[in-house]
Amino acid sequence: MAYEHVRLEMSPAQVATLTLARPDRLNALSGQTVDELRAAVEETGRSGARCLLLTGEGRGFSSGADLASGGGLPEDAGAALEKHFNPLVEALFALPIPVVAAVNGPAAGAGCSLALAADIVIAARSAYFLQAFVNIGLIPDAGATWLLPRLAGRARAMEMMMLGERIRAEQAQAWGLVSRVVDDSDLAAEAVTLATRLAQGPTAAFGLIRKLAREADHLPLSDALTAERHAQREAGRTEDFRGAVMAFLQKRPARFEGR
Image (tube, rainbow, N blue to C red; front, side, top):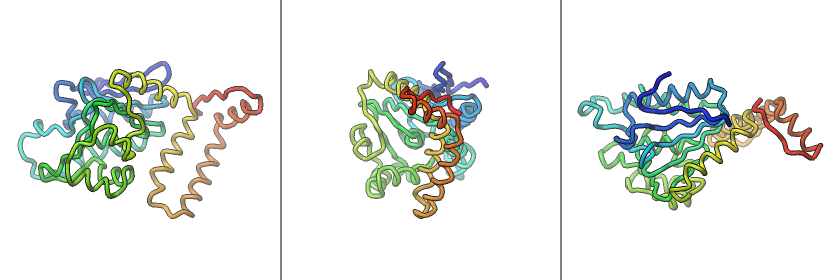
């Protein structure tokens, strides 16, 4: 599929890199952009990729929803969520492979939500995260009210959502929003190295880990243990598990094929 607002590239290491490519608009998320993102995520799921790397072109990850493209005040401010943003978030979480976000510069509004939906977030030192919806009388969306309390805890999430202030990269790391903070010049290389490492790992196990972690917050302990039991049975039937056990017994490095 041809894309106008995003770029999807596959590396020989089976890393799919999905880049927001509207640098002149700080990668603002218009309806078309979000729909292209969803299509690219779904294409990634069919492509045989073993890791998805999300990033933004230019001086920022994403400034959030493209308010200038809306043609005035909407009658229903939630309609765009139902039509565009929510299906993207669902598609991203449905992927059976790891997702890495490399955040360069600002990640604001729905762009912040998109970045934090990744499994591992790497931020440049110049990056910041912003949920400024309250500054225009709206609520955080694109999954923010679900993601932030789980990542940062309720107290910090409420502060971030209600004060609408920038959270710098180092503070985001301290809050648990970000895994790593690196120098701006090192961001791209660090993200590719990490994504490549994940792409060389046990893909089926990663997919099961994503699912279990997502469900854990609303499951009682006994149900979580049962879910682990079923997931372990599934992981134990993969060729990667059997090959890795043989490699361990033969004292050689395991090589995962993603099946």
